[in-house]
Image 1 (cartoon, rainbow, N blue to C red):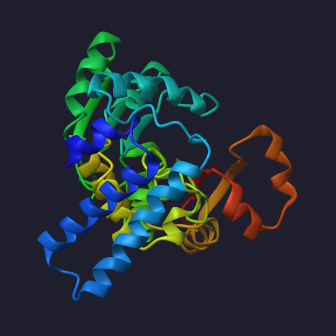
Image 2 (cartoon, helix red, strand yellow):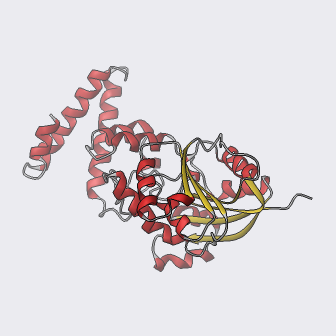
Image 3 (cartoon, one colour):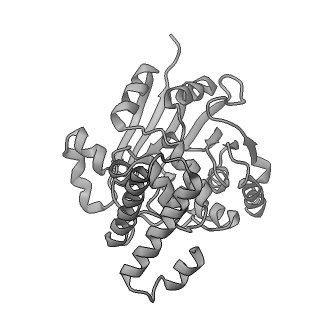
Length: 307
C-alpha cells in the first residue's frame, strides 16, 4: 500500500490520494486493535487525515532541517559549521563540557577555539564515532574526548569544568531542574553555563517541522495523532523523530527563569532571537508574546561564589 501511495503521489487526483491515505490509516488501526470501537478508529483516522491535509496547505517549511536523513559524518560537519553562532563565547584555556553533543561537530569547534580540553557527552552513541573522526581530521583529537552518558546522571566529579555548553539540549531533557542541578554540581566556582532553547509555545517547538509543516501542531493535534502521522510519512529517521518528540521537556521561558532563580545562578547574558530579523521589535513585547514568537532564548549563566 505504501508503494502504491508513492507511485500515485504526483500523478493521481487528490481525491484518490486521500482515499488511499484513509484506507491505509484504517487498516493500520485494524491491525493494532487498540482503539476501542469503530467510532474511535474513524475519529482518529479523520484527525490524522486532516493533519496531513493541513500540512500540505501550509507554506514551505520556514525552518529547514538539513540534518534529517544525512549521514553522521555530514551531520557532524553541519554541527561544526552552525556552532559558529557561539563565536562570542570565550572558550580559551577552559575545560569545557559539550552536553548533548550529538555527532560531535560542535565539540570539535570548541576545541579549535583554544580551549584546554573538551568532552562531548550524549545519550546516543550512534554519532560519536563521527565526532572522533572529525576531531582527527581537524587535528584536535588530543584535546577532545567523547562519553556516552545521561544529563540526569553526569559521570563527572564536582567542579570539573569551567564551562558547560547545552546548546538546544534543555528542550530535550525530561527533567530540566535536575539537569541544571547536575550542571551546577560539576561547574567550578564562577564557571559558565551556556544554553539556548525554543519555548514550548513556539510554532515549531514540537521538532516535527520536517514532517508536519503545521505551526503549533503540538497544540492542535493529540500526541497519538502526530506520532501516527510521522510513522506514515516515510520521512528519514522516523524512529529518532518519534523518540525525540516523546522526550521533549515542554520548557517555557517563564519556567526556565524560575528554575534559574531557584538554583541561584547569575544571568550574565540573555538574548531573545526571533526567527526573522524583521521581528526584532519583539524584544519590546511582553513575555507571553515572546513565548510564542521567539525561536531561541539564549542564556549565559554563572555559578556564584560560595559565601
